[in-house]
Amino acid sequence: MAKKRVSAGDRRKAKEYEKQGVQAYEEWDIDRAVECFETSARLVPDEPDYRLYLARALARSGDFDQALRALADFMRLEPESPLEDRFEQLFASGMDEVELLLTDKMTASGAPIEEIGAAIQMWLEYRITLGRDALIVRKAETWAAALDYTVRKVNLRPVKRREIAAFYGISTGAVRDRHNDLVRTLDVMPCDYRYFTGKDNPLDKLVEAAELLEQLETRFREP
Image (cartoon, rainbow, N blue to C red; front, side, top):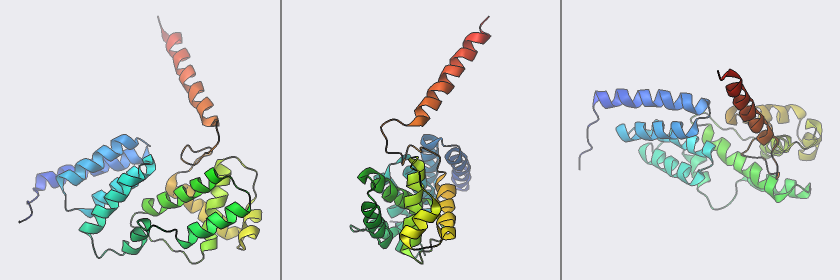
């Protein structure tokens, strides 16, 4: 059966939804971002980039099952993609070299299993969120150390880069650089809800304070 021809009008609409989706994604309006990218993909079903954008948004929302489905659609539309090896690894049943080392070293350090899981989740999300950017893994120790360090920082654990670097047998500069990559790409913040494993997240108090302040300002302005 011949593919349905996509009109120029639909392509323009899809590009506009893509633009809106990217803005929503950057502003952390993830539901809106997913909606926009789904609409773009529906309007132009043969454009692989819309599936890639959708996978990134779904990963940020924590819906990794749907994110992987979007990646599967991307690979179907772009079967010779240079990203094929990276994305196929995400569907593998076993761990990659970074996850294996990370699990071994964090377990040896006495890290809670929840934090190990958070670090593995961070690695999964990072590999999706990179999109078309290249992922270079010269030494598994470098990425494992950065993930370990970043998750500890998110969970407010006292840790020094030099300690993590020594534990993994790499330089402090390598930990710093890969940590910065993770923070920048994933937009990681202190006590980030995606990776914070404690019972009480300090960010909740900030949200409550902001809501209370808004209520007080509303009452203050009442005639």
